[in-house]
Length: 420
Ligand SMILES: Cc1cc2nc3c(=O)[nH]c(=O)nc-3n(C[C@H](O)[C@H](O)[C@H](O)COP(=O)(O)OP(=O)(O)OC[C@H]3O[C@@H](n4cnc5c(N)ncnc54)[C@H](O)[C@@H]3O)c2cc1C
Image 1 (tube, protein in one colour):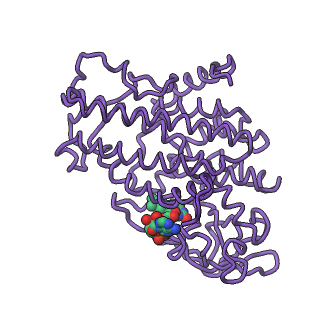
Image 2 (cartoon, helix red, strand yellow):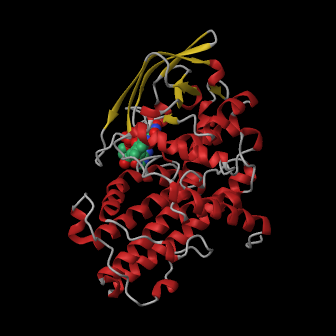
Image 3 (cartoon, protein in one colour):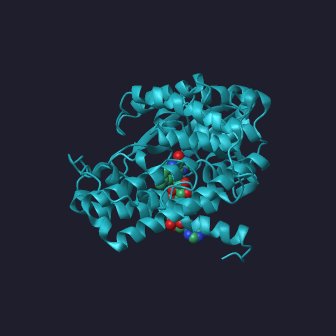
């Protein structure tokens, strides 16, 4: 294994860094979390800019509109985006990070040509219709039914917690095509067009006040058979591919975001003087070390995906570690905020006091061992960001499969322990 960057990787990094330095400062402010059509327009415009500059789908195949580059370049891409404080994927999360990758692995050449380029250009937003009121952790018990009628399926049922469905064009939809009780053997994976008659979306409001997800009611909705990925009743296998991308590689960028968050908290601790307390330094050091380990795991998952086509079951280890670590970072933020953590609106001057003159920054363990983002890129962290991070952190051990379920998977399928 050669841990050094090759000349072409270094030149990729330099080109991307220069491009980001030019365009990121020109971007308008991001619309609020309450304005999803505005967020779609913002995220899609950014995605189109990436595409036009040759920076969309770094590790996607060239014939699907991607760059066909190595996983190392994909990681460099994520590092540089975070370093430049560039926008993240936003409403394009499902399309770019797990529906698209599933189409790459499981789709026919026609499906790849049809779905991949528009996702990369920011023209096709996807959502995920897996969970149902009676099927979350036990996904194989889903009941949304699809009956074959000629060249179409007719779908009736209900999905829930469907993130970004309000602004999506397609939904990766799991339906039951086998007999009731057929569980894993009777599921099919369909790409549902969201403008079809018979679809009713009702938003749900989260603890943060936003309507980022909701309920999806499907009443006799017609889906062409050409929109099926894999064979009829073979959707569980396709679903495992989707979930391994969702858990194994989709959240890789969030490890870098968490490092940046921790750097912001460290700066806050310095500005308020609590950095003098050994316990605070110890907590920051522990979290930094865990983030370094997590980043190593992320790199492993990305290279495994490049080698074998999918990240595999190790994605559960990454997902479990990231979501629980993120909660501990969020708790540190609230502890450091004191009474400012009780206020959602931005407090002027919070965290902006000059950092102390000690130069412990260079010895901190919060940046990963390579040059992902040196400590001089932190901007003062605001109390609103801390409160938002904390409030959102609760959902992290539920979304994309709960921590209990990840532990079951790790115990049974990685460690080979007996079923509970
Ligand atoms: C922010 C957010 C966004 C989401 N977005 C989407 C989306 O876009 N599309 C989508 O399809 N879904 C989405 N989900 C749904 C998510 O996948 C489910 O919430 C999750 O799989 C858990 O299912 P459930 O809510 O039905 O809980 P349940 O399955 O009812 O679980 C309840 C509790 O029981 C525990 N439990 C259940 N079974 C076991 C077991 N066998 N062993 C040990 N403990 C167990 C669980 O860990 C949990 O603590 C989202 C969820 C959140 C929070």
